[in-house]
Image 1 (cartoon, helix red, strand yellow):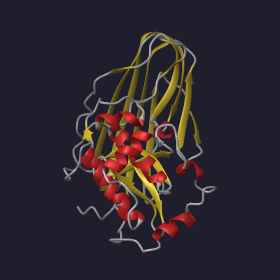
Image 2 (image 1 turned 180 degrees about the horizontal axis):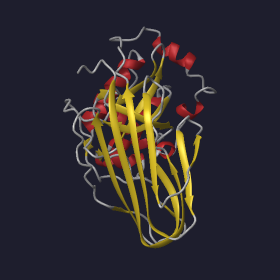
Image 3 (image 1 turned 90 degrees about the vertical axis):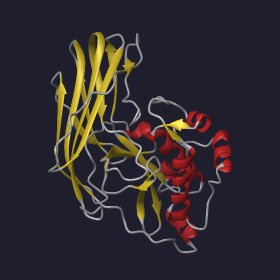
Length: 320
């Protein structure tokens, strides 16, 4: 089947939070329902929560569908399972290069008042001396046009960094991957966004999933969620680029949430009252409709903060 045609995928995402002792209450925000824009369509979405509770649904400031719930009774774990049936869009047809005045055209559409949140530094995507030194050392600078500059930067990051799950944490600063050269998709994406914003390109973070197909450059492991970036360009709109896998966002990519950086698009974020140490087991399965569904293998449990009330328990970086 051609990558130029829409594809339909089934996604199952399980987050199982287990507590060292019974928690007296918990509050959790979910961003697990895929978006319906950019040519992507959602045929169905189902959410299961254990212990059973009724979530409130709303859209956040970035248009992401969110579910908020709280549990007011003692419980030893919180399990959240989402199931999505999605039709994705193929990668757009792109010119080899943009017009000579593309940077000027970009400056006109990238008005600071209209795209302030995607042009200014954010918590995880911000300028620093280390970032400037890294960009200079790797020749990452504005070229003749925005499109070719971004694609060259994506390839440069893919080459410069080592993909190493577990090498960073959910709240690792951008300097960690710049100094060590090792990171995961969240880190690649934050670096690319921070540099692109310094060029005047509105840039946003995307959380979601990728269906692995053995395409050259793929690094994201099976059983994990994923992250990449989108950039606003003249005549092209928001263009998705995945520096971890050195590719455009295409039919393999399922978009769930967007924001300034990971903090705005985390799949789960919440607080637990009591409970002692919290451990999280995350399992993800992405399969194409009609193909045999692989077993949803468990990933290693990950410890979070302990002896805090409430304890903030964010979902780990997409592919840690």
